[in-house]
Length: 551
Image 1: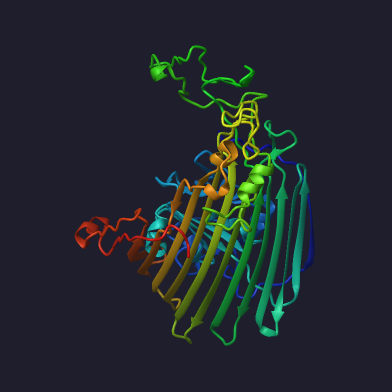
Image 2: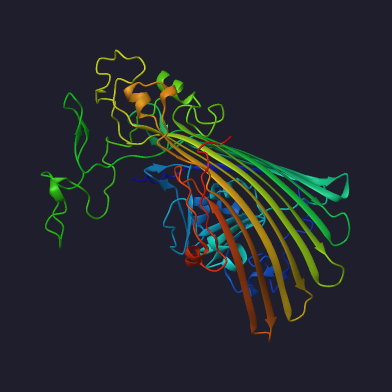
């Protein structure tokens, strides 16, 4: 069951160090009839949002500050049709966030139908969009965007556009503090570097909040603690007229406590002494639920929920056995069967994550020809490491049958079900495109792109160490996925012709080819071109054997 976060009372203060005009901003706003013209890049070129034949929702930097948006969830709450899911395999934390647009949710948790970008460069994880400090704007493109952004943008795309450095030295700082240990400090410094042809912008943010829920299984512990530190750097250069070069780099580190989860049970659980641990909440006292239209909703006499899941009962949740002790500390100090080294990953219960992103963009206006040649290069490295009490109930009163007398110091004396989840992703992307726009009726672009990705995931069942008492040296991974590596090459185009002031005809298209390698458990499987044809023209799928571990 997912718990809704309680209301948070906050107070804020902001100090403006200096104001500086933006140079060459991707969003130049001109007053038109008393309204600001908003320029977006929904079709990989700057266009007035009112002239773009795509459903786009835009939140400017001023909107983001005014509405206090600090996360993807906040963004979704202010964008119709956008939803964020943070639930996966009974966990509700920042190890997983999936974007749904217009109700289109992927069939698998590892896939996506909504692509994510920073300055038009693809990013490895939707979580990364939270890390951009004080962006110029956020564009949410609704509906299929496959022609420009590839097949994983079938539902839409989200693009975060950074602010560019100003011409004079300046900066800003904002401070927010509130109840439940909530605080958020953001600051930036910008200005010319060496000369007026090169500018810089440095940003940093430190965010932290205590959880909103008391952990019934560990007195004094809160569930849902979160903290994030972000550092970013942008360099923008205009060495000659018509040539603009931008570099952006960002480092994000997350350090969270146990996640806010609880369990509502359809059956009753009692301790060995007979004390009530979890009451049944299925609406049945005899293991039978009567539902209108259905005489019995519990086959084989096992109670289960029919219809809406009820809320947690008072005094019975949320509760987890997530106290760090000598056993959990020793267990998570071992790197055996982990894809994240123990020195970097989680130690005990909670979550540790890190995201690194860098991209370089070059735009060259070729004289007065109306042509612009652009290059976009990007790299991402992302990992998350999390340990969770997967059963989500206080089982401290249940005697551990593997250690009933406490004689084994390497095992807990109570029953528990700890689980570790780790994931690492890396990718590199390169795109070249040529755009034509000379203020005439015709405009268009053509481009090519390349994307190479790899991802490791690992599920480690720590039950044997915490409950049975085995050594971490004997640890066996529950599920290891060697990197499904993928290389994608594509060519795309778009063209528009303004027939009249009220009629514009547009055409766009894309051809994409994928080569995928996946771990098959020691068996090599080759898919023939004839068999692969079912996936569409120009698409190829390969399967090959890979080691289950990084070198």
